[in-house]
Length: 210
Image (cartoon, rainbow, N blue to C red; front, top):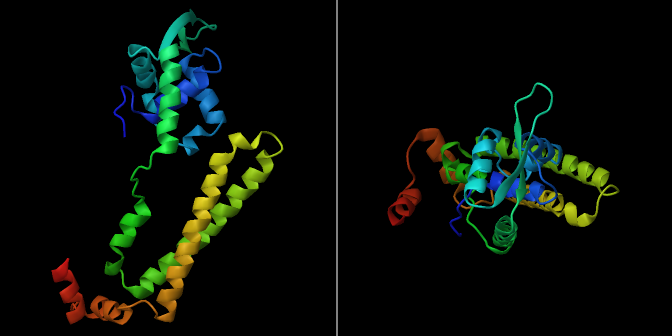
């Protein structure tokens, strides 16, 4: 992945809103929150003013005026620059066209699953698949509500979320079937190891090979 002068994804979000019209940082945050951008990318709102300052430092946005509303502190309004538009488009091209390794927390948990034993793993995976089903249903309801309000091109990230949630649920169900039916190779050795603390011979050979 390219090393960017402003690498915080909040910078991408800021560029997306000032592309529409000049805004001051408080308005940027308001618009982004209203659009649920914190669900699309990891946003730390406390970094907003630092990110805005860095975007200005590198010439991606520029101040156009300062406004004062009543007794509130003076606010600087920013607009996107040609360099900022170029950076914004290049950033989106990279995110869409380049595969990046993004190991999820679930993968980390699966890599350590052996410590829990088969029965506990089954219980937790059943719990997870129920949560995934609930999430997919809520996502679909939200998508159905949004469809009449905006073109599909502005909803594809929601479609992606649903597809990923459903795909994970399918995989978890398949793995659960192997666990509950006893079809998973080595499951009885895994259970004995969990219950007795003694590593079976076949597990020991595997660990040595690793």
